[in-house]
Image 1: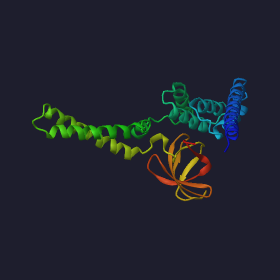
Image 2: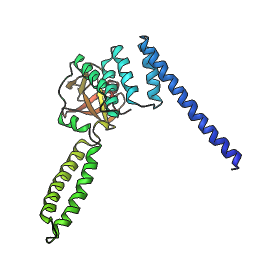
Image 3: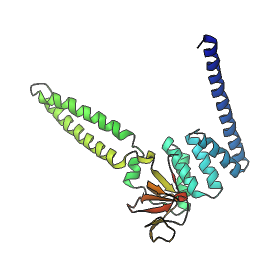
Image 4: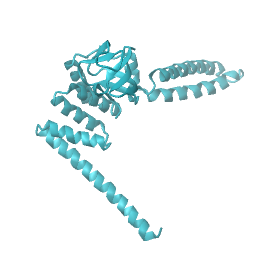
Length: 245
């Protein structure tokens, strides 16, 4: 490829990115303006388009959650507030709005230990790795009985080993945590977990809006899943949505 042609493609790429960013900013500003004017349906449509184009940000999901909230769809509001908190755990406004929406649908149960640990799922592999190597190096120091601080190294090695085992166990328990690609939330009311993929099937339990489930497989309009109570069953696929888009 000659230099002129190479420069042409570089400039074309830069122009494409610039146009894309410009359009994205325009859509974001248009959506925010629509929301400020009380045009919540239009704002929701604009925000969803940004999500579909993978313009992910905590602020985008927060604003989309607010739009759904204003439209009376608490399930999708809860879903998007949780998405915002996954990207930005310190997002206090999203946390407050999430709790408000959960109370409105009667689902203000306290978090389980698994949910609390799931928010920090990214950290446990790092802790496990660091504690493993700390235990190894300190064990080497402890085995040199004549070396100074051998007893201290032995104690640190034991504590690091315990921390490694604990962190590894938590990793296996919570997996990817809140970022698990198969984690979903119930977004519609009157959702029953059923014994079979049919409307007439007997219900296992009733699920609340905002209740987390783990998707396992799909069959037509139905999804086989595990509720946070541990029960297995089928729900209509449209009544739940993955937290990670």
